[in-house]
Image (cartoon, rainbow, N blue to C red; front, side, top):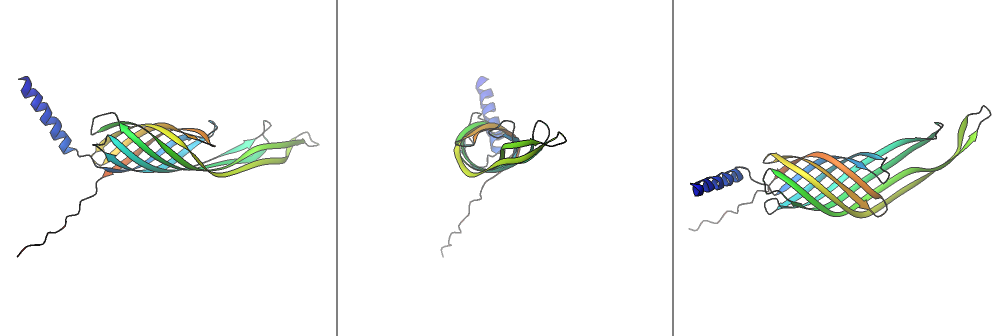
Length: 209
């Protein structure tokens, strides 16, 4: 009886696996809430990712590109306007991930990899105020600094993915990136993905006469 139950369970698992194939390629779109080197500066990063899945989805290699732009108005404690800070990030990440769940619907992955980001910051660095004859304050000089540079570093990430169909997935993730000059950026996001496999070409064999 026990052997029969084990055989039935094994057959059921095998059939379920066969009815839910795992595709070896995926593309994903994600929206992350991401902080910059100053935790008070944060915005939405939009990213796309292409990935290759190995060994029944246990190992994944993914490459992603993302874009974030953030702006905030600066003013003194007396509400004198000082202009607008502008921060832009173009992010590129290569990630190696491992899945801890032996499931074809659920995936809990942890990963890490190198990062190459382009950073464009135009931020306030100082200002001078003068008092006008009527007693109000005004700026006489505003100093700003513009930095445009490539920044190297690494990133760590943890993600959960659920396949609602064999080729459609939803995912959430958290992580951070540590850049040499840009500091640490934390992120948390949600997204949707599409799985697919390339069809093998069949070569017609010549018919012998």
